Length: 260
Ligand code: 13P
Image (cartoon, rainbow, N blue to C red; front, side, top):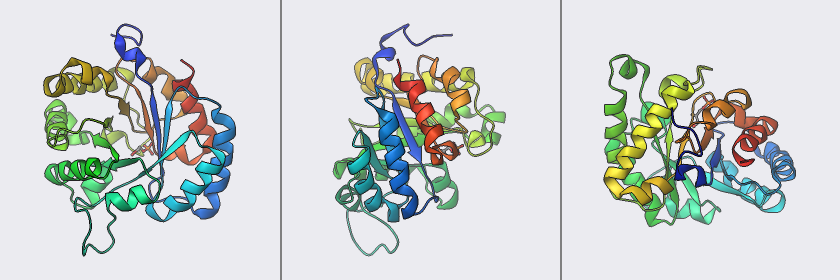
């Protein structure tokens, strides 16, 4: 098993992101930002908050005032720059709201909104055109893992997601069976997937870009299990769902990554 420090991967600045999904209200945002800002200090980790769209503007304001070290991202965007797309948001609108990141291809979008690989690739391209850094989410479903298809799924989702060859992006490995289930991938399982994804990046981009790209893990991450996951050489941070709603837990996870 490879360990952080074995190779240049240890030099990647960790990325720790909060995916709030469809949670929280305006009144929650200020307190969160205040406690986050007070606890962050000067983290060695890059911290990003992904609120739902109505919370972007208040979150941008609250983070700028109280936690300027944290960045903001959208949870989704439309692949077109503008137009008659009721209920959707564009990359330019996300930028305008203060975002620098956007999630693309989260499994809940793939599942609930029938987002296929091609659409996810188009969203990644749209994000880059708007000046946003995409955080491309990939991950196998439970039945795919049981059928021995995990690596094939990851290869397909990564290739389609990066079809436009973005230069500034990060990847989140989120095994669907670990999301919201309390069943975290073991460090070994996660590391195997991350190492495979990095090999794929080497093939697509060459060693330098692959070694620079952050690959974060998501799926029932808690302050308790984050440390063991972070020990793995190719786990460069976390995309946190449920535990990110509690600013104390989120800070604890940041500390696991940022104290190195
Ligand atoms: P949980 O941390 O709640 O399992 O969610 C993970 C996730 O989907 C982050 O994008």
